[in-house]
Each structure stands twice: as structure tokens, then as C-alpha cells.
Length: 452
Ligand code: ASP
Ligand code: MG
Image (cartoon, rainbow, N blue to C red; front, side, top):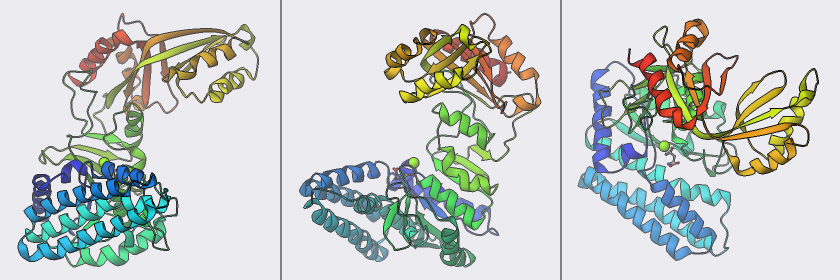
């Protein structure tokens, strides 16, 4: 069970976590107890990033003041949740972590520089503190719990601030350290996001890395399910800013989640759950404010109702670039030449459609468009159309049910479809339309597939 920053934001949020974990233990008394992975309390990592920045410019006093504020916040939460007996050792442990980092900040600021290694030690403080507090709060409420230092378990390479796990070594340590606790009926409480090199230097997995930690530990322990507790009910059938009443997606495949993540529907970043998907372990997104909502389950295969799409997504304000050349007819090398121009100006293209003599692409970031066009016009005719949008219908069922495509197109009757594409994966249909038509198009697709 992984709880994100908002789910451990303060004493109230942590109390909800306590109740959720209690509920899990009571409802499944015969299962091994859950392993709990927590993020830093909400916004804490941002403050620590600022602390590292201040350190790097020699502002030790300001950096240390920031650390004091953070320590106060943690102390406040700790003393709300933990009774007098357990509070002293907890505050001593959290206080020592902060003291160590303050000392490091003082030393490092003198150099007017902060090494990636020192940066990670600073950034790691949030997860260290939150996990210590949650473990103590569990014990206070008679949940059998043990704090585990993730740095002793998650073994990474030395790529500080974006470290990669060594899965074999990590699984070995997980088995050695977390395994026996589970067997003894203890809830292991661990910080996400942080690990250490084989030599013991603290590392972090990159921002948002706690989901990754949960997937890594879950994969090592071969758990039945990984739960990502957050502050939304799960993935929605469409962006609520575009479609009035989207539904919750009960289940989707890893690939569908990846398609949707590209469009910003990222409750979690799919790549972070790869270790779980590789082991066929389902990942469930749940809302810690509304624990009774079933949430969204992500599995390797997904399983939507037959004849249905899984979700819709859109990307607004893209530019369509049409590139036409009679020389393209029967010629080879034209596409290479064309895409080389986009490569040279580091501009990704999203949708690509072709005819015999023309290629149309969409570009999300128009920053280098002028340069791109002036290069393309040396060998082709170019036409740009701004204010367009990509509407994307995602569903594994597109593969099995050929009628979905037709139904989707029909639902868009009389809305001009500028480009239409279905890739070989046949997991999505992409329409490029005028941006002004997006609300209408999304509403109609949503009505046709999710409101029937
Ligand atoms: N606390 C880290 C961050 O804010 C990791 C996480 O929350 O997943 O990026
Ligand atoms: Mg997060």
C-alpha cells in the first residue's frame, strides 16, 4: 500500500491512513500484512529541492531556516499522533536526520556548490521523516508495525537524483529485511523515492519516485496487488474540464494507461509501475479520502466491457503541418529527409498521416516551427494550420471489435475530421479536429461509449 504526499499531508491525513491499514488488517486477517510505502508529506520535497538550491548558491542560513520550518511541521504532526512514551525516541530520530542534513548543508554551502550526492541526501529527508512518523503512529494505534530504512533495502546505481534500481540486489535485501517482518505479522513502513548505492550513499529515484518504489518492493515480494493511494478516485473516462460527468474507469491495461498518460491523464506515470506489470501484479489506484470507492485497476491485459472503449483523451492547441511534394511519388528517402528537419529542431511530432504525395503531422510545441517550415519549403510545399486538437479514443477492444471504429466516426457526424489515424497496435483511434470542436466531439464520443 503506497500513500502519496497528499495522503500523508498532516495528522488528519495520516489518521485516515491508519484507519485504511487497520481496515485492511481486519478484513484480511489471514493474509500477510501489507507493506506500507509513503511519500514525503505534501510539498516537503519541493521545499527540500529549494533547500538544496539555496545550499548550492551558498545561502546556508536560509537553507537551514527552511529545514527548521520543515522539522517543526514534522514535530507538530508527530506529537499529535504519538503519545509521550514513544514520542521522545521518534523526535530524537527525526531530529537527528534533520541535524545531519543541516550539518551537511552548512559544510556544502561553503563550497558554493552542491554535489548530486549531497542533493540526494537533502531530498531524501522528506521520506525518511514521514515514514518514521507513520510507523510510530501505527504502533500508537496498536497496528503491529516496524519502520524499515529504505536505504538498506533499495539498492541503486550511482546516478544521483535519477537512480535506477538493481532489482536482483533489491529483491535479495527485501527478502532478508522485509520478508521476516511480514512473516511475523508486522506491517513494514518504508519511505518511497529513496535508496542507496552498494557503497551506502543515499540516492533518489527522481521526482514522483515513490510509486516506483512501491512497484519495486511489490514485485520483489510478489504481492497479490499494489495499491497506490492518492487523492482522486482513479482514472476517468475523460478530462472533467472537457466532459461534464466522466465515469471512473474500473480497469485498464498497462498499454492503455501509457497511451492516456501521454495526454496528461497521469494519476501515476505508467513507467513507474513497470516492475509490477512485468510480474503481472495488478496495480490499483485508490482515494484515501474515499476508501470505499473501488478505484481503477491497472493490469497487464486490462478487461473492459466488450464493445466498449476504455477512455477518451485530448490534447488541445496543436498545429497541423501538411507537407506535400510531387517528388514523393515513387521516391525513396523523402520521409527521412522530412523527419530529419523535425529532429534537427528537436520538435516531436505526435500524429502522422500520409497519402501518396503528402504527409501531415501534428506538432504540440510550435517554438521552432518557423525554422522547421523554412527548411521544409526547400523541398516541399508546406501548409500550417494552428488551433487544432487531437482527440484520442483508447481501448484494447478496438483490436477485437471492428465496429467500434465506425461507431466512433458516426458519433462525430458533421464535425470536420482533419486527420484520422489508427496505429498498428489498434489500441487507439486518433482524430485531429479543430480545437473549437473539441467540447462537442468529446461530449458526443462520451455519450456514445460511456453514457449509453
Ligand atoms: N516525494 C517525492 C516527490 O515529491 C517522491 C514522491 O512523492 O513520489 O517527488
Ligand atoms: Mg507523488
